[in-house]
Amino acid sequence: MSRNPEWLDNAVFYEIYPQSFKDTNGDGIGDFKGITEKLDYIKELGCNAVWLNPCFESPFGDAGYDVSDYYKAAPRYGTNEDLKQLFDECHKRGMHILLDLVPGHTSVEHKWFKESMKAGKNEFTDRYVWTDSIWEEPQGMGCIRGISDRDGSCAVNFFSHQPALNYGFYKCERPWQQPMDAEGPKATLEALKDVMRFWLGLGCDGFRVDMAGSLVKNDPEGKGTIKLWQNVREFLDKEFPKAAMVSEWGEPDKSIPGGFHMDFLLHFGPSHYNDLFRCDEPFFSHRGKGDAYEFVKRYNECREKSQNKGLMCIPSGNHDMDRLARSIEGINLKIAFAFLLSMPGAPFIYYGDEIGMRYVEGLDSVEGGYGRTGSRSPMQWDKTTNAGFSSAPRDRLYIKMDESADRPDAESQMNDKDSLRSEVKRLIGIRNAHKALQTRGEINFVYAEKNEYPLAYLRGCDDEWILVILNPADREVNFECRLTPVEKIYSIGGDISCNDGRITVPPRFAGFYEI
Ligand code: NOJ
Image 1 (cartoon, rainbow, N blue to C red):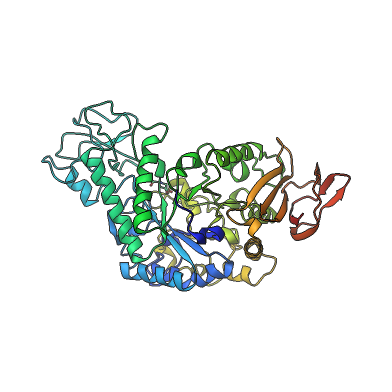
Image 2 (image 1 turned 180 degrees about the vertical axis):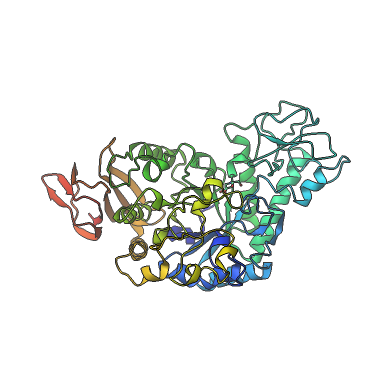
């Protein structure tokens, strides 16, 4: 793997869901100009990088994860020129921006798919995974059938309107399954590189890759998909060596050898990320009935397996999960951010999480969001109409706002030094000031026992070592610790006391100490 682009060493990302961020033309949907307008807000918070959810032409049956033209910005957000301007404005501010690459599937409306549905052979016949008879379904994948002249069923990758692009099968078991080095799969991979070339050429700094582990079929150990991404990495090293790549894979032992610089810990899969924030008794809840042990165990295993080469990124949330504030409240949100912003890897803050935006209950599904819709409501900027998101009449907003009278907003929180946003800003500032806390610093867990509190770990780099102690529970706890905290860098919720090799930690507390 190539060395990480240097800017990742101290990257803190902000995820922008473009349709819900800021509308500047009053049509009720966010746009590129709105994002550009708000870059200073993101920078002021301390984030220096952006991940933008898909912003390409799409029928929006899955919020843009159903691309119908990889080369064209969705008109509702603006033009390719506006997007380029957004890249340039990021760079002017010393920020970087990743686009969302959706390599596994397209929309049924993509011209590649329309061509591939034709009975006669053409350039796109093998662009997707098709069986060779309408009566045979691709096993275990779901399919689209009965809408093409072509006699076959097309595998889908996610929703049933998202046909699977054909990168080949690791093990071919049926005559229609093609190996990775067949002409069709090779052409698909080249088409993907062309898309990447286009946007990197226009000035984006890399990609977040959707379902990165799903490309090669019948590949249970991911060996084929790893090989495919290594091929992409070679291309990037040659043509765009600075391009940064983060995968939605959730298995760093695969994605990192595949050439990704970063992989997400996800709300599905084996990471135990949900144990911390989103389960009946999350570790970060004040009830103090959670358990961080399994998370830490798996986290350490992943670090070992990926030989500590890439970055494991822990998001505050994203457009697919419940808002953090649905299960964690008050000072506990601040403690959760003290964790997120003191862990290795690049942290990702989902828009609005920095002000504790809520999951909006009871919304009808919008753009294929279903239960995810409540986490995708418009950003709350201030106390004006539509919380400053849009000047459109309320019923024209593409998605409903949080209508509660006490909904949090960015402006009020910026003016309140005790707000969640002020705390998040403070924590990012502390991270920026201490290399030990940044992406590549070491981590050693000091106390992470089954069903016990607190969680304590040491972060280190060169000769700086920082002890992080987190006690979300609403009871005092203590733990054995032979380290001597010498200088406090940060604390919220009081202070610790050290006695005879034991540290006593107040309820609902977070603290960082130099040792
Ligand atoms: C993961 C994305 O984050 C999600 O929003 C989308 O629906 C699926 N992949 C399909 O692309």
